Image (cartoon, rainbow, N blue to C red; front, top):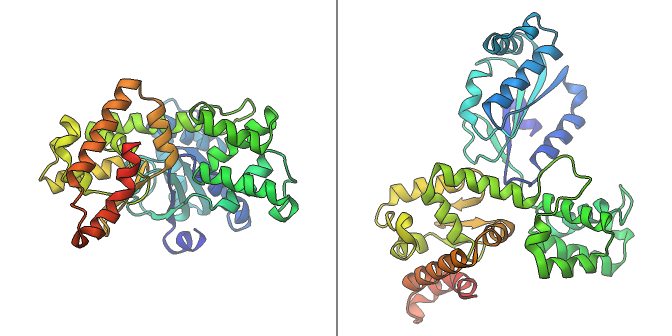
Length: 360
């Protein structure tokens, strides 16, 4: 991130909700605070929130217009300050609507702008993806948050059984920091053991993903985070929402796009319209990935979805809806699954994990 900012002055931490973008931005600001004359922060999930943030920045900077009722004048004054001062770092948190930022930022400046965003297309901002934690890192976060080790402790300070349980929980959470923080909060507040939590999660995972904990102050629960992101996709593009729904009933990694193109006729009214329309399908994929709920691999013509996104989506469906989408998914996979002949083994191997998940 530092190299990106030094080179271009603008960059973005990008990734799924709850993946740790904001915390990573805070850590960056802490590590390089000595190199900045001033560090500024504003929330940017929606325009009214960013306007309010710029009003507060004007107050912080002691600008004469800080008490002005005309917010446009205040924004213009902050932009002017940014354009005429050096060495500042401005962090815009949750800036998913990147085109909206144009009216708030000067075209040329001598400072640095760092975004946190769920957007996968970031334009002039060099995108640095925050990826899910590896099991050992996730275990460390979980154990520290649950107060089962010292704040600066390492995995060598716990028993093999505790480490194994913590890594298993990390895998169950698919390396999502928010989910691991949530699990740690539950273990601390209940209190309970790692083994007890793992058993509860395997039996009632959907309920636990909705439990943020009484002491949490910095983020909504996993369920709320993913539900709100999905709702935004649904409002923007129902076809993209249906694509995500189908993906909840497939294996999470390397989902072949042919399930949605060749099998489109089996997937309901919205997705059936994409048959033989490759441009429309690519646009739907882009909308589905707008808030990082899926990640596309254009080379392999496949995409991934986080396991907890799948869990949340299925948990929020009623019994009839769940059955409907499960059946549609099975029919679509059946439609594209080739004959089990030697010449087709590679295609069978590509689709088999998804067939196995779909029929369950």
